[in-house]
Image (cartoon, rainbow, N blue to C red; front, side, top):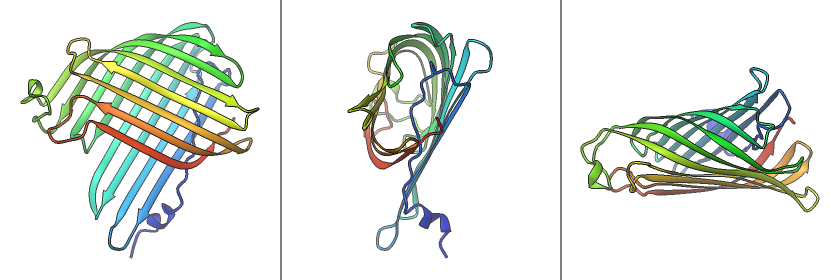
Length: 252
């Protein structure tokens, strides 16, 4: 007998929204769940969960954390099981220019990443900050360590190394815009992350969402995610693309 969760996953749900740390609310939170299940000749199970929380721990400080979990299974064989935790601490985010400290932790089953952590600091430039429109750029520098379960890479410079350490520089851009009198909402969040030591080690990520509001707290959403890593295990593709459809639910 199948787990009832499989049938629940037949109804994809996407509950999320991009949080602006410059907002004055003391606490904001979103929860995202998506899923798909197909049985019969080809069995497929996909489950994604994401949480986004922002709160003010002390005066003039804002902490924001984004945590996600992905599981994919094809023909009862696990294809993906990934964890990603993005954490930021901002000081005076209501200013046009303000500093940040960041820490990331992730794993990736398909890319054979047992553990990746990244620690750094930077500064954010607030270009546009209106109630329904905001745009920000950030520049940061980080130290990164990635532990792999295999040591045969697409670039022979890294062969034999189960751990790759490097310093990175990161350019971030994110924004949100209400268009056509709020009938369409465009969100985007992207970064480019090259190594400061090796020109052949870089990655990027671009996440674009288009929302069509149904009512104040609920919107239909189309989301496109594109990720790229230059250094991967031999015979793996460097680029991943995801196009998802669902709903956005927010509490503010």
